[in-house]
Image 1 (cartoon, rainbow, N blue to C red):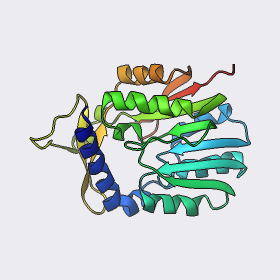
Image 2 (image 1 turned 30 degrees about the horizontal axis):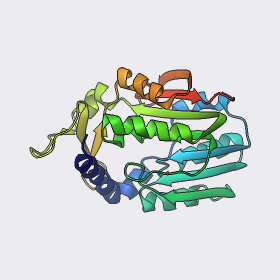
Image 3 (image 1 turned 120 degrees about the horizontal axis):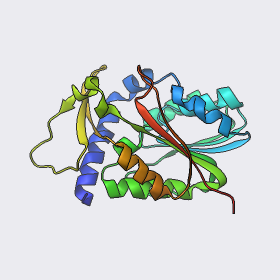
Length: 235
């Protein structure tokens, strides 16, 4: 995908979150069921990089289950959601938040015991860009540490296919790229890419880490997200 298209799709999403940040925050207060599977792999104290952290609910989940002795870095491109995350994680003393657009800005914040990417990959435009993003995430994983990510399988569900919006005639996108409308509060549209099983496996390969488990969880049918937990083996 060419750079101009990447930026155009990213701008659609940046505008989406500017419009919907308050409603999005209110609708995203509960932890994902699939996160429970991660807990047996984690041992505090833990350093965490939460990419696309939104309102910080994954950090809250970790603090609730492992205690507040976390070293937490939350990354997001929306300042309103980052402000909500700061409040939500105020009990975590070693927490900081970075306003970074991971689509257009490389980031190098050191290495971590746990690198997480939830609700992010479907917003990365371009197959090559998604592979590069996975490689960047993998570089942030310390030896013995974990990379965990989830891909939203929205296109497999009729209720989301019913929200698809036609593309404008002047934009050329890739297979499984879609526009979805938002029906909570103010109306808005967002760019989302459906990552099928084959692409998911390709993203695991791009990361170059050891796959520990891949599984489905979340949503009404407990299968709306496909997760993978990967490990950087110690030398």
